[in-house]
Amino acid sequence: MRLIFNRTSGGAMNSSKMSDWLQIAANLGIIGGLLLVGVQLKQNSDLLKTQLLYEESHRLVELETQVVGDRGAEVWAKSIADPLGLELSEQRIMEALLWSFVEQLRSTRMLAELGLLENEEWRLRVRSDTAYYLANDYGRAWWANYSNGNVSLPQDLKSAINASIADVEANFTANYSGSIIDQVRQSRESGY
Image 1: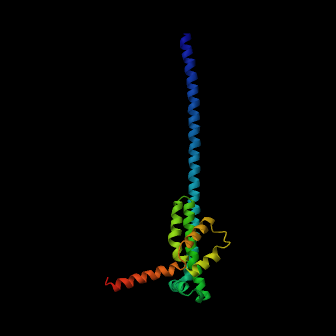
Image 2 (image 1 turned 120 degrees about the horizontal axis):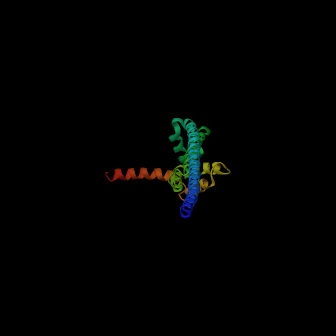
Image 3 (image 1 turned 135 degrees about the vertical axis):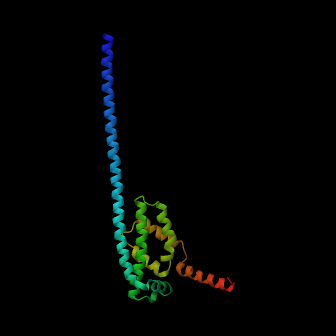
């Protein structure tokens, strides 16, 4: 009888320990679930922030696009060929064009900051596009004026743009456009 009693009381102890372990495991599961919910809320908050900032940026770019109107290409070409000949209204059009470009770079960088793009993706965009827009006399002067003391632009974006501009020839944009015309001439002269 005593042997049976010990087994029963030992079983009760094992049952009590098992219950304690199950309670601990359940509590850990609840804590894990709460942490997962917290991470999801943070991600949703970041996505909402991104969406709101993107929409704000998009509205501002749309406003600047209205300023550009249908003269954008004409004024842009003039800013490359004859930057000192720009009238005040044409300077405003250039402000809209160049600000919108930099704002798009800032937005792309922000997407990377939030983990929606790889960090290298926004840097690649800066390297591939900046020379075309800013590597000319007017673009360089505008960028120097705009970026000087501008605290709303992240320092790494400023540095990437500065490096991109420094890596190309002084009038890259005009030379790029001119090389296309040269290739067309060569093709026509050679009969292609």
